[in-house]
Image (cartoon, rainbow, N blue to C red; front, side, top):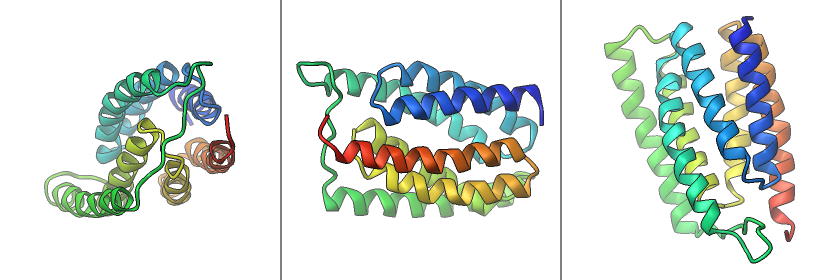
Length: 183
C-alpha cells in the first residue's frame, strides 16, 4: 500500500459517491481519480487498466458536458432510459473489445492478467458510456465489473484498491436505488 494508492482511493470514493447523488462535482473529482490511478496501474503493470484511465478521462469530459445538457429546470440531472437494443449493442461491444484487447496485451506486453484486465477494461468503458448518457443500468454493469475487480486487485496484492472496489459495489447499489427514484 502506497500513499498514491491511499489518495487515489479517497478521491475515487468521493467521485463515485457524488456520481450516485447525481452531483455535477463528480466530474472533476473523477478526473483527478483517473490521473492518480493511471500512475498506480503503470507501476503495477496493469496496462489495460492504465489505458482505461485515459479513456475514462475522455469519457468523463464528455459526461460532464452531457450532464450539463441533461438537467431539468431545477438543475437536477435527469435519468434517461436505455433502449434494449442499445444495451445489447453495448454488451456485445464490450465482449468484442475484451477479446481484442486481451489478445493484444497477451501477445505484445508483459501484462500481469491480460484477459481479465482487458475484459474488465472493455466493460468498464461500456458502463462509463452509460453513466455519461445518464442510463440507470450503468449501475448494474458497474456492480458486476467491480465484483470481479475486487478479486483481481486482491490477487495483485492491491488490498486498499480491492477494498475500494468493494466499496464501489456498495455505492453502485446505492446509485442504482437512487437513480430508480424520481429526482
